[in-house]
Amino acid sequence: MQDFLTRSSPLKFALMSTPQTWLTQEAADRLRGELENLEGVGRRDVTAKIETARAEGDLKENGGYHAARDEQGKMEARIRQLKQILENAHIGTPPASEDGVVGAGMVVTTLIAGDEMSFLLGSREITSDQYDVYSEKSPLGSAVMGAKIGDTVSYTAPNGKAISVEIKSAKFI
Image 1 (cartoon, rainbow, N blue to C red):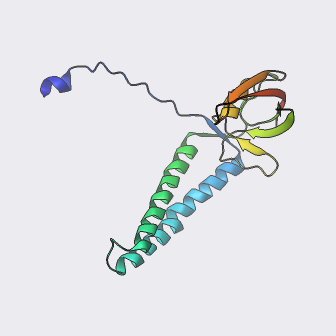
Image 2 (image 1 turned 45 degrees about the horizontal axis):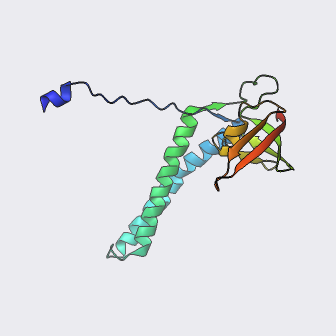
C-alpha cells in the first residue's frame, strides 16, 4: 500500500480554467440580491417546509417532505452556481476587441438562412429586454466569437445540420 501512495501516477490531470464571465454592474447586483435572498429567506422557508412535512409522520410516503427536499437541493445548487459566477465575474464592460472582431458584451447582427438576427453575446445571467442573449459557449456564440464583420462562419445545430452565419455588424451597447 505504501508503494502505491508514494510512486508517481502516470495519469496527468489538466486543470480546467475557470471561464471568464463579464457582467454589467446591474446584472452583478441582481445576482448578489438573488444570492442574499436564497441564503437568508429562501433557506429559512425551505427548512420550515421540511420540518412541517417531517412532523406529519412517515417520511417514506410523505410527498410534501420529498418535494421540500427536492426544492432544497435545487436551491443549494443555485446558491453554489451564483457564488461561482460572482467569484469569477469581471464587472463592467469587456475590453474592446480588435476593430470589427466579435467579442463578449457585443450586440451582433447576423444573416442566418436569409433572415437578419441581432442578439447580445454574453453570459446567460445578463438579461436584456431588447435582445436575446446567447452565451459565448453556445454553438452560435462560439461560432461567431472572434469572427470579423463580413466573415461567414458555421455551427452545427442540435439536429446535426450545419448552419451558415454571416456577420453583418458587432458593437457594444
